Image (tube, rainbow, N blue to C red; front, side, top):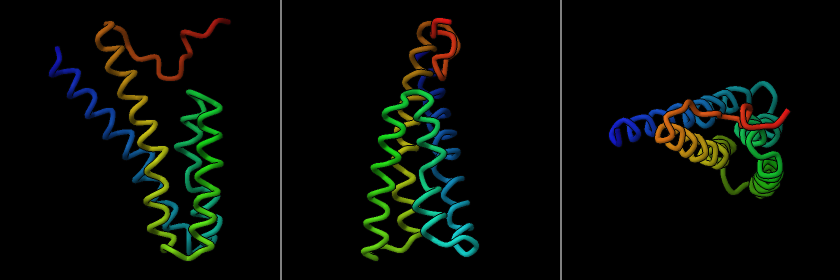
Length: 126
């Protein structure tokens, strides 16, 4: 049972990192020539990961998006790193947060013997 929970956690973490880090970052980098690095990296950069995070916790998702956008803007304007490197680094933050939350929820659901209620839909009162 513990081995299955570990395999499940690794799978959930891998899927989250692919969906919320690798895939969006590649799209951002491909968009840079078409729309410019400001819009692609700074504005769209963390939108997917932070939007999913906001579905779990609105304040954390919005706060993280605003903080990362300000950080990206400062680093981008200073010219410290290239936009592609900035995209890979800053997209990692919401992806890791979403992965940790998803793994925790998946493992706790496994040991309770239920399916994960990813966004708290079933636990909300109507």
